[in-house]
Image (cartoon, rainbow, N blue to C red; front, side, top):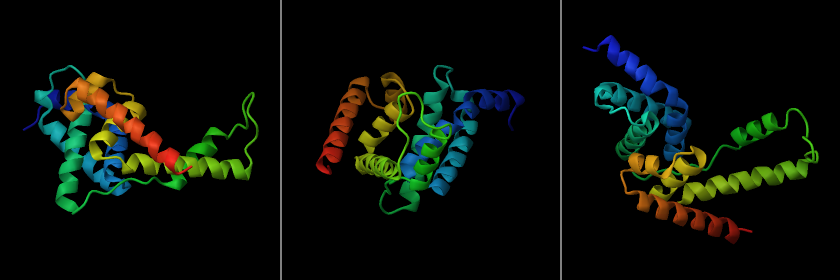
Amino acid sequence: MTSDDDKARFATVVLPHLGDAYALARWITGDRSDAEDVVQDACLRAFRAIETFGGSNARAWTLTIVRNAAYTWMSKRRAMPMVAVGDLDDIERAQSLKGADGPGPGQASQTPETELIAKADAAQLQAAIAALPPQFRDTLVLRDLHGLDYREIAEVTGVPVGTVMSRLARARRRLIEAIGAKR
């Protein structure tokens, strides 16, 4: 039976990080629906284990559970891991919201050609990230998209900080090589 203290603790520890949890699950699974299933499973796991939270870093603790839930989910449901290629509709929507007020100071107005190039570049970047080996992709996404520091990434992935640093460097190098090779 759960106590009101567990519910309150869950609300303060896990709920503030649901957006990051979903984004991480989406990157790992490559699918919106799968990511929702993973986050739901991770929330159940987190709620059941809320008394084990030591109080140090709620975001890293939550993302660790999400990452583990995602890989467990994928191993049970998929023969091979899927890679996220990105959704051009999401990119287009984000770019249209960014430019909704018109060009800012010093910015030229977007032409259809520049918008198409930007979409292609964003899709190419997402595809290159998705093609990275999982340990590199996870490290890169946690650092550059979620803004976790090295220590937090080490906690989430269960590896030493030095390994996080080398994985990040290798991921970035591979990303640069992949994008440079296509130009």
